[in-house]
Image (cartoon, rainbow, N blue to C red; front, side, top):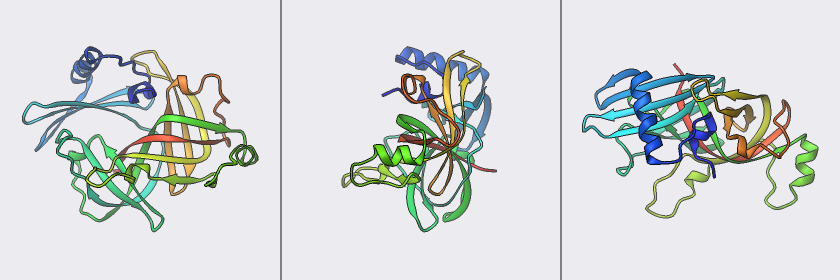
Length: 238
């Protein structure tokens, strides 16, 4: 499985690579102060973002994100606390209307102070762990013969399926119709990645995909069907 940074055109193969990337984020990013510490927001271009963090105890962190055109209305129910994660990381338990719950990670959580429960629009970016692409609904129906069989637009919050005592995670399996699709280049690294805006159950999600998950398979095209497993990162719309 590709790491999440590769989904926005960043190669990270070692702790040394991560440390160098963090140093660059501090150098090029915009510093944002909060009561818990500082964020360093680096807009790399073409939607690729990095969110560095340094809390008041000098604990560092770095998260990728993608900024696109997605819109996903949800009720923000509460923040999920996890003592094993950095204090400036954020994780929200959300509800998509009366349909299904789900969890998203929020790279700039400490900037926001939502009053739970609160209905907001989220810009969700889904970082692909794997994908399947179908040319049409007929192609999807023909190739998906196993049970249970999901509709083309489906959303399964797999991060909520945890053992007792485990914390929910921002992972999901979903499928939907591709509204726009293109190959992008990270302007800083020169590396390519794929982006698709996907209409799924509940709203639209920006999907970013490392090239290795696309090469050799059917290309991304408007009106094709895309399904897969993803990590969900989201920012609260202004």
